[in-house]
Length: 349
Image 1 (cartoon, one colour):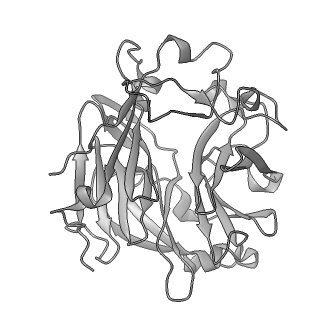
Image 2 (tube, rainbow, N blue to C red):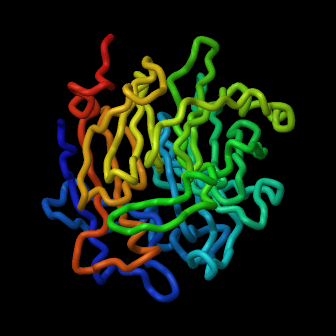
């Protein structure tokens, strides 16, 4: 079984510990030229742009981000401070887009009141590029408000889909991760991924609630059409059940249809080839680590076909405590072709 190479470990040391009032910067990058295990975090695009509560010009709490093929960085800012019942909404949810060539923000879109509700927690983002850069849509998952928000770059507007498939499965709310048993029974639609373009030019958005062992699918031709918001129930399709203890956080698919997903129950990263049926027997594990991969929380594939995975021990942070003398936040990287070799996901073209 190929092993994911540990590229670097990002330690939450004294200089980046969570403060009582704020973290120093919510959006950071690290330099890969540092020959050290824990390179310093550098605020992006600047310290000033990470000012807590500066709704118009700053970033408050960044949860997910995505880089597209047009060298734009899409950043979802929740605008919140705190956690669970201590959460305070300092700023409205906002989608920020940066030009990576100039490291400047080129757009900030504040979500409409109609896009959220009192329970909203928008946790993830997928970016769908069409034939040109202006033909781009972003899909944002409302984990606790059970909705899917669509944003059109060309129209600079958003709309919200609702569906019962966005809700948690009441039979899948029990978790066992890193030696901790707990219940997350309210977590709905979370991770999302997009397939390569289909014959009609659209893609398929794959998604699942966090408290679920099942995947669902919807064509982006439906999501891109605002008029289908109230007339699309039967366009959403349930796929086969993955099996027990198959909770998935983030996932990503490359241009050849190789799908990677973080298996939090197994401290592992899984895979599936889009050319195969979606059912057990065609899933595989490309790497696991019962220490370093406790709660793999994000996954990305870069333009060189490397998979990047981040783990953060979130259950320990929420349900127990973090040992700040240990490495709690890790980033891993490995070539896609190395990971899938000799697995059920191996590509044959």
